[in-house]
Length: 153
Image 1 (spheres, rainbow, N blue to C red):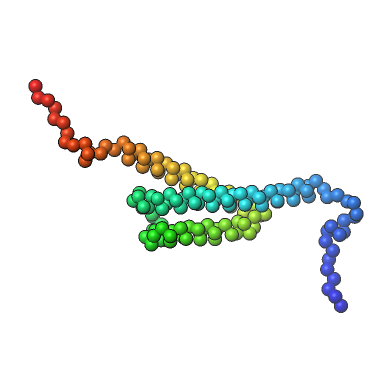
Image 2 (cartoon, helix red, strand yellow):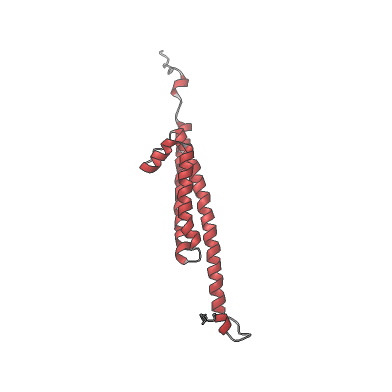
């Protein structure tokens, strides 16, 4: 005896029958969701690259005091280690988003992560702006020479 498989829904539908507009719309939304999640993950990768560049740059300039003990230890090992660490974390985080990209929760999670990375990019921007302002507006007293004494009449 052979195992009998159940026919699919397309085999049951009468010949010439069209799908309803809601089925087509639902399929379009799910397909669009997959494309949106892929786009959001690409955005996450781009913002993560900027975060990595700013982290390495500010660490090398002595501006960064890392509060995360794991990241602080990895930063002490050198630039290649922090690059591998950040890429590994984003790979691990991207996998479930891409694996379940047609699910609504994956879209919401990708959007949340992208918003957090965007807020981090704004934070980095304001940090460098403050650093630039403090650098250019702080007088260099060592090269200014001795102060000029007021003339005594």
